Image 1 (spheres, rainbow, N blue to C red):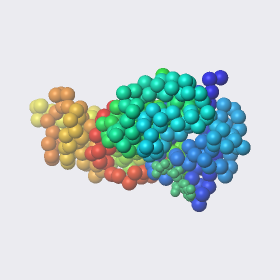
Image 2 (spheres, rainbow, N blue to C red):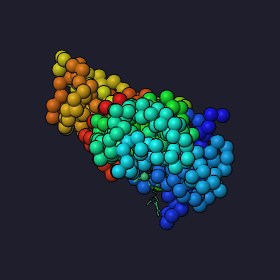
Image 3 (cartoon, rainbow, N blue to C red):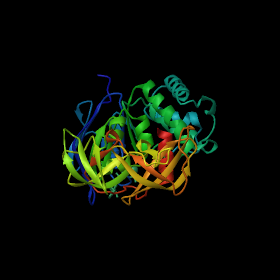
Length: 386
Ligand SMILES: Nc1ncnc2c1ncn2[C@@H]1O[C@H](COP(=O)(O)OP(=O)(O)OP(=O)(O)O)[C@@H](O)[C@H]1O
Ligand SMILES: [Mg+2]
């Protein structure tokens, strides 16, 4: 077995409330796994339990099949990279990276070789004589990574390692980090509240809420098939529309009433209450002209609802279009600026096509875990993610 297999069995940690609440999770050797969730949902606590900095209230942590309950932090084959890099300010880059090996009493020749190897790996060889204060945030982050990698852990726990960086640097380091993980082949357990990071880097991810895992799967599955409104909302901008389920089946399909219209949805006929939410991603909302070229109101076709353009936000490669449905709710569409789109401006009447395969009816309240409304920044991030 290559090592780096993590298993959490009914793991719980109570401080005042339950910070981690009965979590079961298996991360395979060499997997890039992310824990995604809002502030306070228990991500860091989960990492600290695995690293051995906290003792569980109940349940256990297994590493490569061995129970870690009585194994102290320094005897576990895991290493942590924190959001704050905590480099030694008076040591240069090379000495910072070498520190852990020296501490372990590794011989000088091996240290020299290993440090050179990992500096190469994070593309920091030419900076080896500099001190942390002479490096940019992204460069310091790479040194923090190198310092963890040099110890050759089977598991690397990363707690929002890119959190302190600006958006552009975050994007480029994200790509590097993923490539690096594939090259070194060690298990990465990555913690973030950034959905774009989790979606683009992970082999699999788990969405957490109040200490519990609410959904686990590959990024595409979680993005396209959110289990409830919480996940849908947290995984980027989603339109949540309150609907009544008026017909169930066949299979997972159903029909819902949205204002005056009845819409077909391919998913949501099972296990949803009669009063539920229909969810659709902005990039799946299609805007069609309200009137045909002849000036006659076209036969609307199924799953179309009348709406009016309320606001347009230019985002570069796409335009965010805020629409007000006749039924009253606001829906956001993301239109690619590819030259094909119909002319829209404030007040333009349109038809909105909500295709059945893009429409999912979910249980759960219409909450926004980040406390944000549908906003431009999230939409912009989202369009970059796509
Ligand atoms: N040492 C502690 N004592 C008491 N409560 C704690 C302690 N550490 C964490 N908590 C609480 O446990 C919950 C989970 O905290 P945790 O740090 O795991 O959240 P997080 O998901 O990492 O959040 P963030 O994204 O803000 O870092 C929070 O409600 C927090 O206040
Ligand atoms: Mg945290």
